[in-house]
Amino acid sequence: MNTADSYGRIWDNCLMLLEQSGNNNGASRLLKNTRLLRFSPEDKTFIIRTPDPASAEWLADRAAPQLTRYLCGLTNDWDVQVAFVPEEPEALLNPPGKATPELKPSGIPGETLRLVWVHKSAREIVLQPERVLSLPRYLLRWLPYASPAAILLWIALYQIHYLKTGGKRGTERERSIDTGYEEMARWSGLSLITVKRLFKDHQKIDWFLERGPNRYVTRPDGSVRPQLNIRMRAPGLTPGDSADLSRWLVEHDFIQDPEACLKLALSLHPREILVYPLRLPAAGDQAVNGPAPDVAEVLAGLLGKALNPPLLILAESLATHLGLSGGGDRFLTVSWYFMQKNVALLGDSLAVFILFCRSLIYHHAASGVTRNDFWLSGGAESIAALAGVKRDRVMDWFKPGQAGGGQ
Image (cartoon, rainbow, N blue to C red; front, side, top):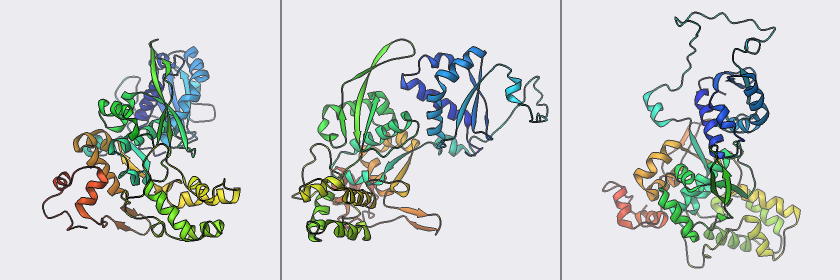
């Protein structure tokens, strides 16, 4: 962990997550009387001052495991711990064998000021660059088939799940999340009315989301509040990609020799199998109706039977190769500021189109290579089809003469 991070802000965010979880066994009431004493970089421990030994013992026993999960996620460090110490724990602050550091007087009786960098500029104060969300780049290939608002809702639910599981992305295809409309609106940048409308007109989100029965949680103040139980799926193949992959497999003798065909696919660039930079809906594509298939399901459908273990391994490798799974550069980071400010300012269509453009550019730190432009065949018409808006609105996004002349 970088010593320039604001540990106080991390701890405040941790307490916020605990409060929002609604499952803290009353720990929030005790934590209101605590404060972050310091962060110990030697053992990666957040040391929390409590008013009395009883509170320290209770929080260490009942709250520490949940708080540790949140801190690990917020710091992206799985070795982080939390320790509770009662008022004036001199032995804990300066354990035997460690010399007490010689502190210079601060001019305030009984108090030593310890300053750390929080932000280096006014720009950082506003933008908060340390607060980011992440999303799989492949998700943005769904833009021609799903509404921009649905894409933003997926991003919000992915982040909510990430935080509520202690910062673990996980590799499972389906994730269960307990949340509410207000929380989804806050993380997506969408209005509360738009989020509720998406759930009412659920055909727009059925490809990645299934709503279960409501669950009821007890808030710290004793009130009982319903929460939506949502089963969220990873983005499967778009209808266009599913059709193109099936066509490519059939043309390369997948039925006769599936193993050799899949190994050939893994040796090729994804652009030789799927259409890039985008695949617009075409006649013959299946309608978006229910869960989207993954690569293994497409392969099994062509063979007419379940895949054996060797083919399952190759199917998972192909899914990673095509960008449906995996990590690293297959993920795109989006700033919290963009989601909170720009989405409302730009509108969901333009905001998600900007994310789509960002998914196609890159900067390779090792080689210094930067690609910040790309060709988009069809010009404004393609952008309109991609973002789900009229061509005239697309033209309003660009200055005169910069629409690309059809490219």
